Image (spheres, rainbow, N blue to C red):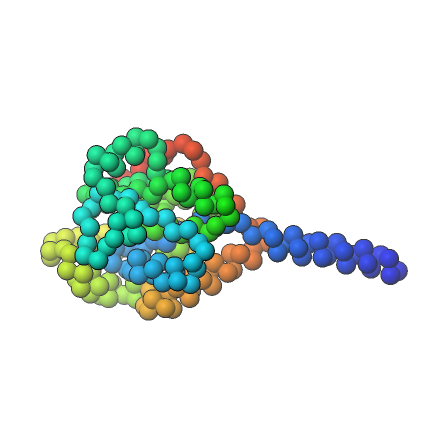
Length: 228
């Protein structure tokens, strides 16, 4: 092999290396799981480790819990406000959960992806499936509790539900966990620190794909899945 041909091969290899290095696309990272599994706590720590990502804030009509801040944990809206936004096709996905309306605003997500930012969205499992149906390249991660007894303990410790509502949440959680097979990865939230580390490792792997995910968000609205 002549020095000229070797030099040419090296140049092409360098071009390929640079192409792979720059091929990563912004990810639409969907964090889901049953009620009480710790989605909010995990995402709060993700903010500290991934400060450059955009964290979508879900709109909801449910009552604000102690310690929750409007615009940070949720966008708390009246039913009238929510329905007005829904009619304007402002939500990426929306659903009725435990009698309350939830919706993920679409425009900020599209804007963040356009600017090359990874986007983190927190939704319940039915919302995650809706996002998968309209954005197949979204990265779906399912948070699991260490056990159902631990999930029950966490739900009870919140002291936001009576016994009947608590039992209903546990029954629904059992059904939701059965849908984890439709997700890309699972993470067991035994300790928050380990769960966040596991999610970061998943994202790192996705950033090294030869054929990266390319998220496309359609402009049209999609119907919600049936309420739980």
